[in-house]
Image (cartoon, rainbow, N blue to C red):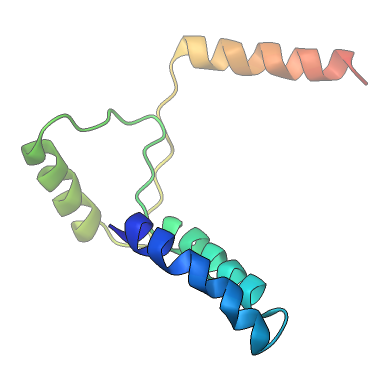
Length: 96
């Protein structure tokens, strides 16, 4: 919905340059920065299975809200992931 609202408002941002020449760029820059900051509030999904049903999403939400912010979990890595990381590390050494 916000995408549609933005597409309606975007053409009118050009008229803001009559107020200050950098005003349209400033507004778009602030909105981009704000969306980036809000993205940081999304839960981490690295090494976790993604949800398929609403019940799983509700369970995940309950787990996130009950977990204290001081606890940090390390994502689980299997052997194939570690092998890929080692191969990437060895490849990086060869390009020096």
